[in-house]
Image (cartoon, rainbow, N blue to C red; front, side, top):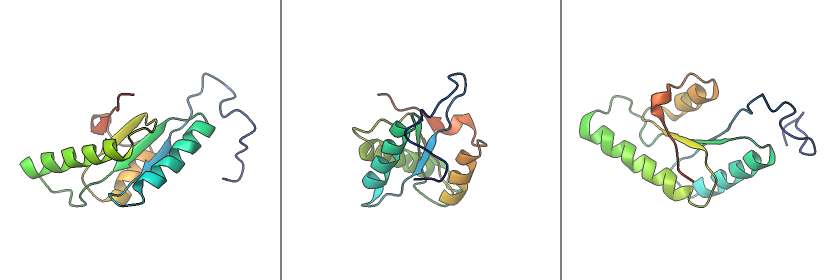
Length: 119
């Protein structure tokens, strides 16, 4: 539990204030489903949206058909690993994963990079 967070109190004291999302970065590995499930439990507990980020390829200079097919493979991975988990939004973008996480966490990621998952 993060210091200062108390699960016995509602996460939103003022309904006019939108809760910040729980950002969950996943790699294409055997731990992805467990990491995503833990993030989903936190999002539910704190009544916060769950935002999943994934970088399927670290080279930000990939272009053309290789870029499009890599993005599509990344989206397919996120949808597969999040099947049955309430994900509010996900972002799949090529580039250094650590930069994607920072950009999303500080809100500087452009909205065109987002893809909403239908419930």
